[in-house]
Picture 1 (cartoon, rainbow over the protein chains, first blue to last red):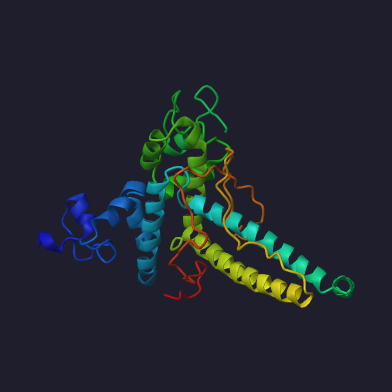
Picture 2 (picture 1 turned 135 degrees about the vertical axis):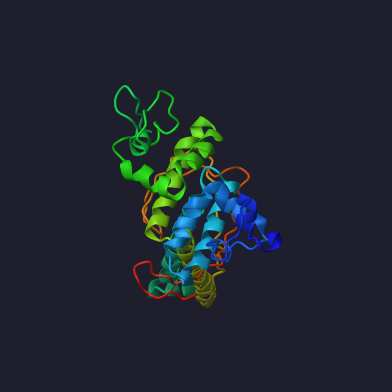
Amino acid sequence: MNSSRCAACKHLRRRCPSDCIFAPYFPSNNPRRFAYVHKIFGASNVGKILQDLPVSYRGEAANTLCYEAYCRIKDPVYGCAGIVDQLNEQLKVAEYQLATIKAAITTTLQPSYLLDQSLHML
Amino acid sequence: MASSSSYNSPCAACKFLRRKCMPGCIFAPYFPPEEPQKFANVHKIFGASNVSKLLNDLLPHQRDDAVNSLAYEAEARVRDPVYGCVGAISFLQRQVDRLQKELDAANADLIRFACAGAIPPSPLPHAVVGPPRQRPGEYNSRRIGDGGGSGGGGFYQTPHNYTFPYNYHCPWNGSYNPHGGGGDM
């Protein structure tokens, strides 16, 4: 029976009931996954979050919780929020560069610009 | 950074936990009594004990940013229990990918038009992430959906060992609608 416990129940050192909320999402072959979420969120909080969701959404929720927990362990100050900020910064840079290139294209297509270039070639 | 002490009024955390706010309370500097929802969210998602351990493991000058990022993640998770702030990451990464394609196409156009004018083009470099900011900054809790450079003021100091590739791989492309729509799972 011990070998059929999920990673959560193994970590919590308890019996794994047949309706264990964690079992479908924290298989015993990946103990680190539950260790991460337990360290950051706590088993009780994770259980409540999953319990409040329709069954069809719980898998994705467990995955994103694992991801957030992993990010927080790697970066205890900023966690996932740091990635959001970094992406926003990338967007700003990319938008600025795109605007600059489009302005350069507009200039290049101006008739006066083309005429000026033609005269330089003579 | 707001502060509170038992001499004035208990911090939001101690009010929520219905306990005396002692001098040296780990939560008091970061959870002022005027922002009860901040601690309520953090407590709901992370738990007071976990937050306390996390803050104790950090240097004092890091704790303000840590609390604000925790508050941001907690609020995101309360609003979207399935994806939390990972949903924002996924959305923003798609925006970045889209802009990158536009940049590449625009660069190619510029080269083509400039060549048509017989002037050697000076294409702009492929858009890359600049070096991490060197100056310390403040992390401000931002609202969900502030993607696309809305200027919410989220500046921070990237840790020195944090490397972030331009195309950050985020495996989620879910279209879960926390407000009742179907999920594409």
